[in-house]
Image (cartoon, rainbow, N blue to C red; front, top):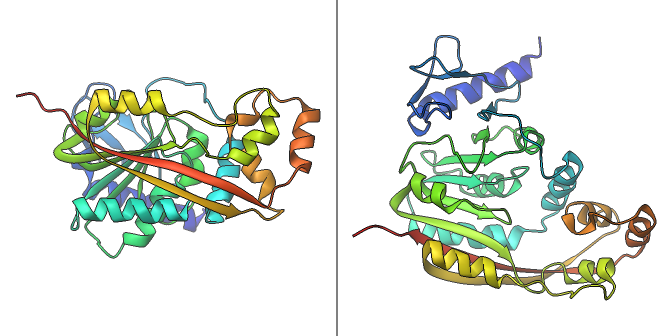
Length: 295
């Protein structure tokens, strides 16, 4: 018996048991609880087991993942190198400005979990905070749950989140597709949705190498921002721009973490890997919004 993993399961069960009021059954929408079999269940006998790493798979149907495990593993290495640290610090500042005391935070579309983990790690002195990460990719959540953080990890569909109405203060959506109807449903009336989107210069050097004049190097977030404004009451926007020094060991991970290389031939991929740059531009926009309440 793997004692370390057993303890991890028990720790996750204990955490979820104290926060079971968050969950609704993804099948029948009933409230959930930890049952006698130590699974997360509802009164209609729909039951979901914990994985050995302590996460819950709350998908009700098989899915074809959009991103590969290799992409998530590469992104994890880039995050560990501190690539997004200034973004994380700004997000913590924004979250604490609106909710200085206890808060429940969900990272919706959390990928391999580095962003919510870093926020948790830098704010964990507030023991009553609740942190959760949800993503449709089992591979990504498997990586996310590798740490020993008190974070609730779920494999879940953003179009059918397994949480009850008005259970979160903050919904984060970082460089990920959004489902604003679900985000608003699970958000408290005074809560915030915080979305991070690429700015026009994001990964500009990498785009230049990959596209080589075939497409514009700049990226436009105009339609994404317009849609955010349409679905939510926009509160604030923030721009995060900096240059990140790239060492040789990180360069392959930086390339593999992005879908930009999809469709590239093996020959072109080798050329990209051999064309190194000393630094990469990080250009991000943070949008904060509140749900639109009916009069």
